[in-house]
Length: 556
Image (tube, rainbow, N blue to C red; front, side, top):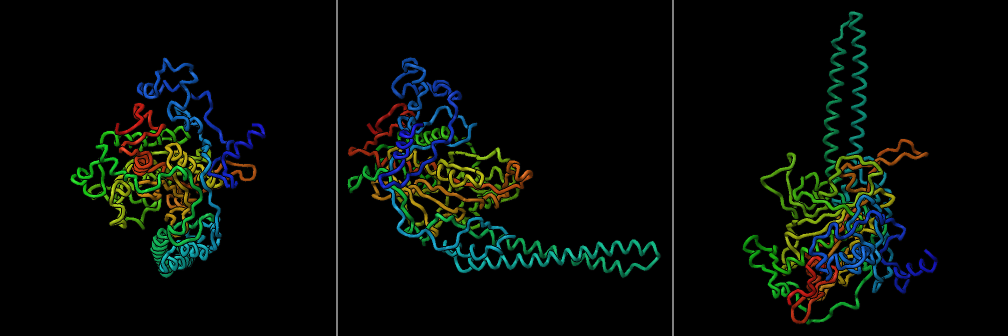
């Protein structure tokens, strides 16, 4: 690329203030051109018709391979390809449009000590206790939670002392056992020696039993500790202290009192029946019909296709998971009240739960495994229903589709080597943002503060979409980097490739991350409200029209 072109590309990815929008290096490789097959080989017959031309009338083969046929002009600009080739695992480069506003940070990120290199494990907690306590406190943890760090250290010290006693007793028993053999050969009385051997064995057994009990207690306390925070996570008590990083489409927002809520629009389109849902399942469930149901399906299919074309492997996962799986990703033990437990079914002798997010099964696929470095990065995408009891949200968001017990979500999950974690997390966020821009939905990216970031996350950025009916921004995606927190809980490791400096490298813990790409129900809400017309009809975003047989307006 010439220097002039390079400068233009850099300028396109920043605002006039010089602050960069979320983007990835343009050097990231894409699927080879030779691997791209014609669209006509995979697309259903209606797809060619829906874009206004048949394959026979479309002209050259280059036109038939144009990603515009699937994803529209935005997808072509992104370089999305179809069909995808997930064998090549380097991420694509989302070419996000210039942000409307990028907000400089007006205050220091944090006064707490850095937790870089700190791991939540029993053996090393003593050396990092003050750092961990500072991070628990920064999250707004209770005094009991902060004091539990010292309790874990004390328990581990007791366990180490007991281990010395046990090892000494075992050494004594071994030595005395050898002495007994010699004494028997010499015809000596060995009753006293046997009594000492039995006593040493009993001491060792008692120490082992106490060690197991103490370790169980310490691990229980350790599991209740949240992840340490990234240096980029700002201090703050709650969502009011979150930091807006950037906004997109701000000038295109529909502002005023003349806009309908999504539920009014959907009912006007004969596509939303809350009474039927209530009769069948009670509160916080929805029945969608007709064009609205098709629009919801189109959103999910568009999200899946876009992510697959961007290098994620699509996965169809179970909707039931075990207690151990939820413990591995951090939903348990703290958030059990928000889960739906299945009373008459278990998993390997454990309680079974409906998934609150497909992050749980996707991340746990490799629980207890040791991967090879060549297996990384792993990038997955799944569309599933998700189930949440919303125990702490009584009386909140009771209207419409915003907060449901069951909702569809397209989830992105990555498992990567630690040295690539930050870049991959930024790329994941960009992949989610690209969808909002493709749908022409005004949004903002918000860095969550220490008091609002999730239990398992080191850092998190929420994408909040503008809803004209409510005249406010609402979360539609949450993109979180977990570090090695989940990998340690799941006992997931990978073995680095040998190098001249380290010919036999020890297994390491990878980093995990996840994000909504996107929450389908809330994306549906945003499309209905942002693309509504005065007569109650809704314009279909251009990227969704191929999934709706070319339909341009819903309701006419």
